[in-house]
Length: 179
Length: 130
Image (cartoon, rainbow over all chains, first blue to last red; front, side):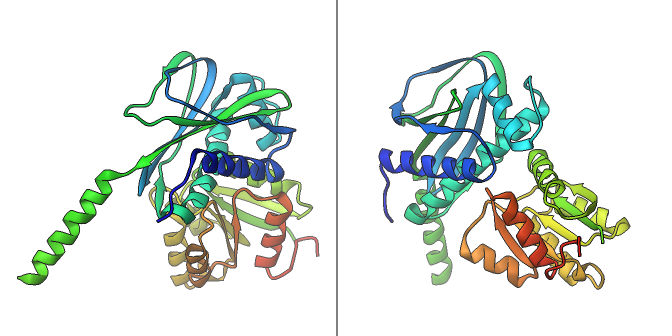
């Protein structure tokens, strides 16, 4: 099984995001330099969409943007003007995140094997903080679209639990075969 | 000839997007019905005839694979062309859906013209304006 680097993650996120803008969204997409972060992130008046990874690797993929940027992205996807964050805007952000993170996962699977993803959870709030448990860092990939900023964050670590479960499964199968 | 379609996806945003794409496609779209999973889709199909079903795969309750399996096993519903619209682009999955009877497969994200062309292809080349 191959491994991957922070730069691989940045490149895959950029590719999948660019493909989405080339096909289903509009606006001038600019990719900014990716970086690693482990600090508590504090957000104001923003939308945060989170999707979990499970399988050979565990962690999460997320998209974060201001309420105004969420309205711009939703307007672009649904070809309708949105001026405030409502249910339709949150649905659109969930779908946009699902396509970016889902296609990132598809590309990463070619290197590391099967990974599953959860359904998206979207949060809209005026003031909140987010942090990762454990030692792993986010790889953050910032973008702007016509000047509005959003970022995609990926956190992945090897799933030690699945290896333990596989070993236990193999042992049990071997014991059954010997009986 | 108007095309009546059923869009099956658990994402309201994606159903909305597909509906808009069809509205702007130049195809003469009649009724555009919606369902959020396979089970709901089968209930809609009990009471409504459609010319094509566009379905996602990963959905709660009943996924697109089971929907396709049940449609293929049904004496009447098996004649409705099914176009799969999914984020899953693995070759094994695509082949499985085609083997189960799907007429086409579009991966998300997709350009509007790709969806239109695949839908027309699934319908055997008749685009509703002919």
